[in-house]
Length: 260
Ligand code: SF4
Image (tube, rainbow, N blue to C red; front, side, top):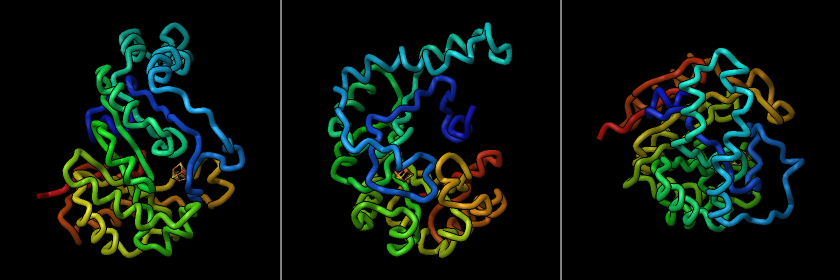
């Protein structure tokens, strides 16, 4: 189980991580994916085609965990995993660049899946049309200048990110802050002011992990210790109407919850 089980009750082994597009309009230095191999153009699949492929592809991705092959997985859990219940639209790329995202999420919802949509917040008009179970928007900088240097957007989307945050008030929602040591772990009071405005239900302050292609752009030392993540999350909470709700040391993440 991952920390989303601990924080939100999600059955991790029944959660499909997927993306409807591999494209992204940011070049975050902490991103684990490769920008070098991003497809310039992409043919979009129809929402119905994606829905139809979910079961088969999830089974394929789980194949190595078969109880027969790996005796650390119980037969019961293996069988459950073959019947996913949750879909996290977040694997790679920015999902709001997929033009039929609202329809896709509606289809998932109608089919009984719990949907998590994770966005970088650069496309508020698209977010406003989406109805996931829980919406995530990333806030990876306390100010515009840091946003431009750390997230390296193809255009300046800072205003759009702020607009996306303002959409979170009346929904089940979370803001994700990826904390990169030495690059964006300052000015907690400015993060607090932005969060206060957003009205998001939850905030995840998560330490950057030195993984994938981000290792070409950052150093191992950019990973904050859990102690540092907890301290920073506490500083944010003490400057706005959030309190520490939970934490997971292994994933170096602290969950804040809005008090009122
Ligand atoms: S917005 Fe997400 S997918 Fe895009 S570059 Fe940043 S971390 Fe990677």
